Length: 444
Image 1 (tube, rainbow, N blue to C red):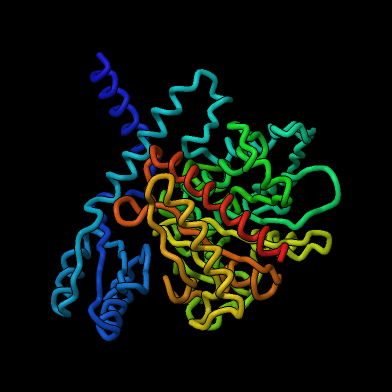
Image 2: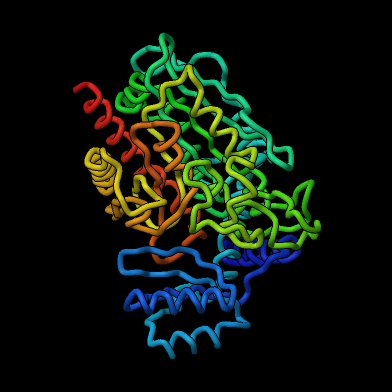
């Protein structure tokens, strides 16, 4: 009976998903390409440009490039890779099958809830509506921590998007004088669902401390916390469900939903700005693109987007002394520090590197997950106008990191829901270890 019920459930889910999802990726593959030299890498990038392919991830160590290829171009692309003697493997054979599996999981988990108004769960990918409901449910009054001290939880809206969605900021602290502050930002890229999931887990741990951990409460003793769970609400909604401003769903959407300067075709890929190329520090100098139809379009000007401007206003607030900035992304398992715009390192790279090493070692203890440490430019790729560089170079925050969460080479952006909890748990361990390191360093 259970097997047949599962079959019926899957059939219903797939039927509903086919009706809802307009942008499908049937037959799309992800090739993991490993150029043999810099010259070979240039040849690969020429193939990418010639066929207008989407790069999922590009890394410097080993020069691996993950490339999304449509069924219409897969034969010609693989032939050209073979002609240039470029090693590659078919990493994901059918993107749509992974999307379907993930959305069946969502459908089945949603059916586990008796009350549709209580569907929020830290172990599933929540919609923006569900996240907003959770945020509004956070008490503005004090909670009591394990030590008997009060924990203050507050939230406010720091901006509104093009599609009139709120950008939530949650503050978690203790009564008394303001302390050094930590800013966590997630959900800047719409398709990276695991990032908001981790941010929500951190909020729950700091605010409610379900395990009654003195180590977690110590984090609230030592720092004031400011957390943006979804910086890109419009894009995130676009990857989940139809909304007021669009009738489409695209699970792999990256940017926000700014209308292009030409036309208003709802199927137009030229919507949106890559918010993590729109920050004002070293904006648009070389690698960011001015092409509105590219995934890394940096916008018409620095801080042109309400989302990036909202972050700028908070980070440059005179009454908050930020000490640590972390931007959550996926995927690849990296714990990185500035810079993204240049191969040179910051003057204090030694301390940033040690901090990242401490974080990933604590993280590894939980589930043996391996992370790579380095600067964005040297570990991954060159990128200007990113939040990390702005936080360090312009906002003047001492410790700044970008964390690329799970996984490495199996699911990419389509991480299954059964990996949410372990990802959250190990990341929390990394944050706790990093917080302890920074606290000790600042006391010297």
